[in-house]
Length: 415
Image (cartoon, rainbow, N blue to C red):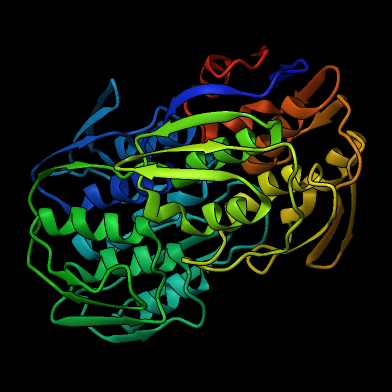
């Protein structure tokens, strides 16, 4: 168990460069299994989840090198289609290898995935899609065996616009015979990035970024060079930290259009945001306003940002309400913020926040990746010393978090 120590800080100030998107890099790494040529990926973040995915691909026989944010992969000679729980149990994204393995080899055997304990996140929509494409599966002792001699295109309607299911079905359909149409699918930027990568390898995908994606299957995919999009959640986290601390920062290497919902809420609170190219500056006046948030699939407010925003809303002076519609356990961080003198009451899927108080340093426990970020923001703004246990969660989604915050003037270190 690692600990993050934060001492009372002045308003953060300076500039920070955002790393590549974790939630885009992981499915693209899985999609390498579809290819039979050399793949070169740039802007890959150095994260523990990326390390696990590299181990998974290597276990399957993929040849990989990773250095200085550039990853090369060659999956031409895959030697294994079975993954044990000691690998899949470490990250949720491990299940994204099923679509590529099924499409290319007609069979996959994978233990059910793990990850942060923020909700059930079943894989039923993934399996529904695979079944529509002609696959058959069995589930026994926590393992899924799925096979199909030849995947055939189909029309698939998702009951919920699941990001993971959209990605997995899209990858499987890229080598299926005929046309596949996915309706009510996810429209996140990470979906578009995955489609762009597959198309560069020779795929035929249109409509990514909308609620209807059309995939015309091809016989094989080759290699390509591709740069992963910036991490919008990391960017949003630094933006929220700036506003919460009353600071002013410049955030570089971003796509501002991916941050619209977060920028809109921060502006509503009173922040001043100026966008220019792939950068923005954000400044927070002393007087901030309360607001209400409801998490929704993209382009709505992202569930991955609500815990960080909660730390900010503890300091805005009025009453705010957060409604979580995606994951049922997203409020696990609330008791830890309360230990820091936050005034929050949770009722089912809603959290009511009284922002009239001040935060005080305390020893707290991170329960997942985004709760760790929320507690770090609270610690930056709190009086006194804050100790965050289980801070290794941060390493799953934030590259060089302590280093970047230190460069912004935060007294922070990990031990």
